[in-house]
Amino acid sequence: MPYEKHPDTDLILRDELAIERTRLAEERTYLAYIRTGMSMILGGFFFLGYFPEGPFHYVGYATVAVSLIFIAYGVYNHRKSMEVIDKITLGIFSFKKKK
Image 1 (tube, helix red, strand yellow):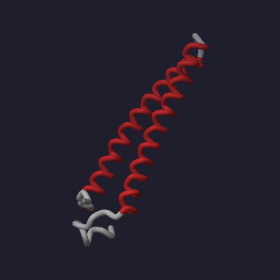
Image 2 (cartoon, one colour):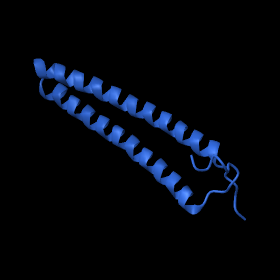
Image 3 (tube, helix red, strand yellow):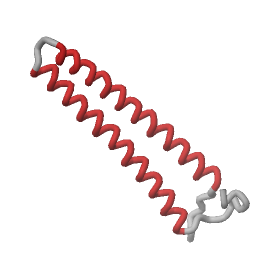
Image 4 (cartoon, helix red, strand yellow):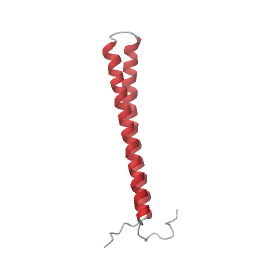
């Protein structure tokens, strides 16, 4: 990393903006996981409500189960990624308030 040689230097504006872009990209990815999972849950409820019996009823159960797993993975991935981002940014840069 380029800042390992100078761990006590302040961030320049370009670096602060790059960190914020990374955080916002992670937030967008997290929200995409949630949005996709919610859409799959609605699709599963459609199959459960529209088809009372038969193979499509089981497709509804499977879709709801997969969507819950998908949402859980999105939450896990988001937390893990944010920990890595915080570890990298706080470990390398010292955030001193400019006067």
